[in-house]
Amino acid sequence: MFLSSNIFSRYFKQFNWTIILDDAFSKLISLLFLLILFYIAKKLLHVFVSRIISPSLKFSSSDIARQKTISRLIENVLNYALYFLLIYWILSILGLPVSSLLAGAGIAGVAIGMGAQGFLSDLVNGFFILLERQLDVGDSVRLTNGSIKIAGTVVSVGIRTTQVRDADGTLHYVPNRNITVVSNLSRGNMRALIDIPLYAQTDLEKVTRIIQQVNQDYAAKQAEILQEPVILGPQLGDNGQFYFRVSITVQSGTQSTVYHQFYRLYHDALLKGGIDLPTIYTLS
Image (cartoon, rainbow, N blue to C red):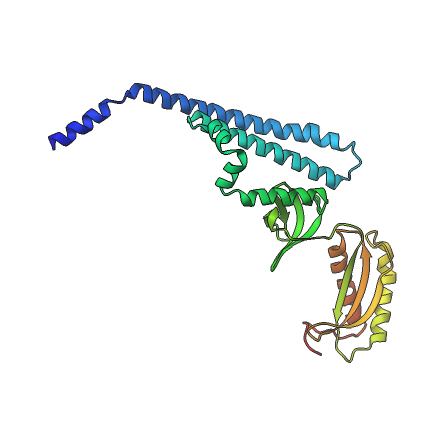
């Protein structure tokens, strides 16, 4: 027992604890000072983008959505650079040979060694999404990857991820490599297709007259409606449901509002006109 304690005593005595504690305290102060500088730099970066970059983009020929996209992209890229410098300085303060590591293995080798293949794939796919202008901030989109579908409004477009907020307020962070199909609902005029379920024995002539009257009374008053509603008439759905379809050409982004408004108008007018409507989509 005495021999064991003597060994440990000699082992710990070989360290100069004053130097070790001084060095640890110095590194702690340096890290704290670095984090404060990083916080200040991040705030200044946001001010730089919002006060200088964003206003300067207003003088370009790009529309507002494109200006927001470019502004968010510049801020994301600068943030990535700032985080990279932060990590580099933290490792340098801790005494790790970062420069030797980068020089010996190469940046590409380090990225692959850290499992960054997915990150590089995000960058490449994000570059082409931005280059081809598949979507912009504020666009209403559907993003598809096999059976996974996300629909909503684009909040931010970055070189690594795209942020989409859906109808219930959920914010989705979608890696760019997982975006295989982009369905943009904000490019050009859109159509609101209104399908009104009917019974098979319904008087279609009467239904047509009622819907035409609703269109005459309300369609011209809506600035979002670009053309006179087109009555496509009776249709048969995939589930065998019989319904009556009306197509309304509207400004992009307003199709949902117009759909709900005119569905209610058609529904109320048909009931008032004595047309019985099924409560659910069932076989007639």
